[in-house]
Length: 197
Image (cartoon, rainbow, N blue to C red):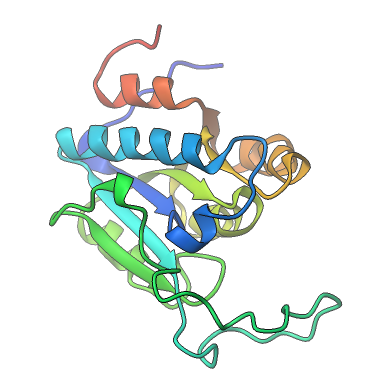
Protein backbone atom coordinates (compact mmCIF):
# COMPACT_ATOMS: atom_id res chain seq x y z
CA UNK A 1 0.00 0.00 0.00
CA UNK A 2 1.54 3.30 -1.13
CA UNK A 3 2.22 6.05 1.37
CA UNK A 4 -0.57 8.62 1.43
CA UNK A 5 0.19 12.24 0.53
CA UNK A 6 -2.49 14.93 0.80
CA UNK A 7 -2.25 18.59 -0.20
CA UNK A 8 -4.38 20.55 2.30
CA UNK A 9 -5.15 23.19 -0.34
CA UNK A 10 -6.57 20.62 -2.75
CA UNK A 11 -8.21 18.18 -0.34
CA UNK A 12 -11.64 18.38 1.30
CA UNK A 13 -13.32 16.27 3.95
CA UNK A 14 -16.89 15.22 3.14
CA UNK A 15 -18.82 13.88 6.13
CA UNK A 16 -21.98 11.98 5.25
CA UNK A 17 -25.15 12.04 7.37
CA UNK A 18 -23.69 12.26 10.87
CA UNK A 19 -26.99 13.56 12.14
CA UNK A 20 -28.89 12.72 15.29
CA UNK A 21 -31.53 10.48 13.71
CA UNK A 22 -29.10 8.35 11.72
CA UNK A 23 -26.42 8.19 14.43
CA UNK A 24 -29.05 6.79 16.81
CA UNK A 25 -29.53 3.68 14.66
CA UNK A 26 -27.75 0.39 15.46
CA UNK A 27 -24.50 0.27 13.47
CA UNK A 28 -21.81 -2.26 12.56
CA UNK A 29 -18.94 -3.02 12.39
CA UNK A 30 -18.19 0.22 14.25
CA UNK A 31 -20.59 1.84 16.70
CA UNK A 32 -21.82 5.28 15.72
CA UNK A 33 -19.98 6.81 18.70
CA UNK A 34 -16.62 5.63 17.35
CA UNK A 35 -17.40 6.90 13.86
CA UNK A 36 -18.46 10.27 15.25
CA UNK A 37 -15.29 10.54 17.33
CA UNK A 38 -13.02 9.74 14.37
CA UNK A 39 -14.97 11.99 12.01
CA UNK A 40 -14.75 14.85 14.51
CA UNK A 41 -10.97 14.32 14.70
CA UNK A 42 -10.76 14.45 10.91
CA UNK A 43 -12.87 17.63 10.79
CA UNK A 44 -10.70 19.28 13.44
CA UNK A 45 -7.53 18.30 11.58
CA UNK A 46 -8.85 19.53 8.23
CA UNK A 47 -9.91 22.87 9.69
CA UNK A 48 -6.51 23.32 11.36
CA UNK A 49 -4.83 22.66 8.01
CA UNK A 50 -7.03 25.25 6.28
CA UNK A 51 -8.83 22.53 4.29
CA UNK A 52 -12.52 22.57 3.44
CA UNK A 53 -14.89 20.56 5.62
CA UNK A 54 -18.23 19.66 4.04
CA UNK A 55 -20.93 18.44 6.41
CA UNK A 56 -23.83 16.69 4.70
CA UNK A 57 -27.20 15.75 6.11
CA UNK A 58 -30.33 14.30 4.56
CA UNK A 59 -33.64 15.97 5.35
CA UNK A 60 -37.19 16.42 4.21
CA UNK A 61 -40.12 18.29 5.70
CA UNK A 62 -42.90 16.09 4.39
CA UNK A 63 -41.22 13.52 2.14
CA UNK A 64 -42.59 15.06 -1.04
CA UNK A 65 -39.14 16.21 -2.21
CA UNK A 66 -37.59 12.76 -1.79
CA UNK A 67 -37.20 10.12 -4.48
CA UNK A 68 -40.03 7.60 -4.70
CA UNK A 69 -38.94 4.62 -6.78
CA UNK A 70 -41.11 1.53 -7.06
CA UNK A 71 -39.17 -1.04 -5.02
CA UNK A 72 -39.46 -4.52 -3.57
CA UNK A 73 -38.81 -3.02 -0.13
CA UNK A 74 -41.14 -0.03 0.27
CA UNK A 75 -40.53 2.69 2.87
CA UNK A 76 -41.62 1.81 6.37
CA UNK A 77 -44.97 3.18 7.51
CA UNK A 78 -44.47 6.60 9.03
CA UNK A 79 -41.02 6.94 7.45
CA UNK A 80 -41.44 10.71 7.14
CA UNK A 81 -42.66 11.14 10.72
CA UNK A 82 -39.41 11.89 12.52
CA UNK A 83 -38.39 13.82 15.63
CA UNK A 84 -37.79 17.54 15.11
CA UNK A 85 -34.04 17.14 15.64
CA UNK A 86 -33.66 14.03 13.43
CA UNK A 87 -31.68 15.88 10.73
CA UNK A 88 -29.51 17.99 13.07
CA UNK A 89 -25.79 17.30 12.79
CA UNK A 90 -24.33 15.65 15.88
CA UNK A 91 -22.81 18.27 18.23
CA UNK A 92 -19.46 16.45 18.37
CA UNK A 93 -18.72 17.71 14.85
CA UNK A 94 -18.54 21.25 16.25
CA UNK A 95 -19.81 22.93 13.09
CA UNK A 96 -17.56 25.90 12.27
CA UNK A 97 -18.42 29.05 10.27
CA UNK A 98 -15.92 27.99 7.59
CA UNK A 99 -17.62 24.63 7.01
CA UNK A 100 -19.81 24.14 3.96
CA UNK A 101 -23.20 22.63 4.85
CA UNK A 102 -25.22 20.59 2.39
CA UNK A 103 -28.71 19.15 2.73
CA UNK A 104 -29.47 16.38 0.27
CA UNK A 105 -32.76 14.70 -0.62
CA UNK A 106 -31.40 11.36 -1.79
CA UNK A 107 -28.48 9.02 -1.05
CA UNK A 108 -25.66 10.87 -2.83
CA UNK A 109 -24.29 14.28 -1.87
CA UNK A 110 -23.62 15.49 -5.43
CA UNK A 111 -26.95 15.18 -7.22
CA UNK A 112 -29.17 18.23 -6.75
CA UNK A 113 -26.65 20.09 -4.54
CA UNK A 114 -23.82 22.57 -5.07
CA UNK A 115 -21.10 20.19 -3.83
CA UNK A 116 -19.29 19.82 -7.16
CA UNK A 117 -19.47 23.58 -7.79
CA UNK A 118 -18.04 24.45 -4.36
CA UNK A 119 -15.21 21.91 -4.64
CA UNK A 120 -14.20 23.06 -8.12
CA UNK A 121 -14.30 26.77 -7.22
CA UNK A 122 -11.84 26.02 -4.42
CA UNK A 123 -9.50 24.03 -6.67
CA UNK A 124 -10.13 20.79 -4.80
CA UNK A 125 -9.35 17.57 -6.64
CA UNK A 126 -9.31 15.09 -3.74
CA UNK A 127 -11.97 14.25 -1.18
CA UNK A 128 -11.80 12.20 1.99
CA UNK A 129 -15.10 10.48 2.74
CA UNK A 130 -16.55 9.25 6.04
CA UNK A 131 -19.94 8.91 7.75
CA UNK A 132 -23.01 6.70 7.92
CA UNK A 133 -23.97 4.55 6.14
CA UNK A 134 -21.04 3.04 4.29
CA UNK A 135 -23.14 1.20 1.71
CA UNK A 136 -25.73 3.93 1.15
CA UNK A 137 -24.79 7.60 1.52
CA UNK A 138 -21.01 7.13 1.52
CA UNK A 139 -20.89 4.69 -1.38
CA UNK A 140 -23.38 6.64 -3.51
CA UNK A 141 -21.43 9.85 -2.96
CA UNK A 142 -18.21 8.00 -3.78
CA UNK A 143 -19.61 6.68 -7.04
CA UNK A 144 -20.77 10.20 -7.97
CA UNK A 145 -17.36 11.65 -7.06
CA UNK A 146 -15.68 9.01 -9.22
CA UNK A 147 -17.84 10.00 -12.18
CA UNK A 148 -16.97 13.67 -11.56
CA UNK A 149 -13.26 12.83 -11.70
CA UNK A 150 -12.27 13.35 -8.06
CA UNK A 151 -9.46 11.47 -6.35
CA UNK A 152 -10.82 9.78 -3.23
CA UNK A 153 -9.63 8.51 0.13
CA UNK A 154 -12.00 6.50 2.29
CA UNK A 155 -11.64 6.64 6.08
CA UNK A 156 -12.56 3.02 6.68
CA UNK A 157 -12.79 3.27 10.48
CA UNK A 158 -14.72 6.57 10.32
CA UNK A 159 -17.67 5.03 8.51
CA UNK A 160 -20.08 2.26 9.34
CA UNK A 161 -23.27 0.57 8.15
CA UNK A 162 -26.31 -1.11 9.66
CA UNK A 163 -24.66 -4.52 9.29
CA UNK A 164 -20.98 -5.47 9.13
CA UNK A 165 -21.44 -7.29 5.82
CA UNK A 166 -22.74 -4.12 4.16
CA UNK A 167 -19.67 -2.18 5.27
CA UNK A 168 -17.34 -5.00 4.24
CA UNK A 169 -18.87 -5.25 0.76
CA UNK A 170 -18.24 -1.57 -0.04
CA UNK A 171 -14.74 -1.66 1.42
CA UNK A 172 -13.75 -4.87 -0.36
CA UNK A 173 -15.39 -4.56 -3.76
CA UNK A 174 -16.16 -0.89 -4.47
CA UNK A 175 -13.84 1.56 -2.74
CA UNK A 176 -10.50 -0.03 -3.78
CA UNK A 177 -11.57 0.33 -7.44
CA UNK A 178 -12.34 4.06 -7.22
CA UNK A 179 -9.97 5.33 -4.52
CA UNK A 180 -7.74 4.50 -1.57
CA UNK A 181 -8.91 2.92 1.67
CA UNK A 182 -7.06 4.14 4.77
CA UNK A 183 -7.48 4.45 8.54
CA UNK A 184 -8.16 7.77 10.27
CA UNK A 185 -4.69 8.04 11.83
CA UNK A 186 -3.05 7.61 8.41
CA UNK A 187 -5.23 10.35 6.90
CA UNK A 188 -4.56 12.72 9.80
CA UNK A 189 -0.81 12.16 9.48
CA UNK A 190 -0.90 12.66 5.71
CA UNK A 191 -2.77 15.96 6.01
CA UNK A 192 -0.24 17.16 8.60
CA UNK A 193 2.64 16.09 6.37
CA UNK A 194 3.72 13.40 8.82
CA UNK A 195 4.23 9.66 8.54
CA UNK A 196 1.63 7.51 10.27
CA UNK A 197 3.04 5.42 13.12
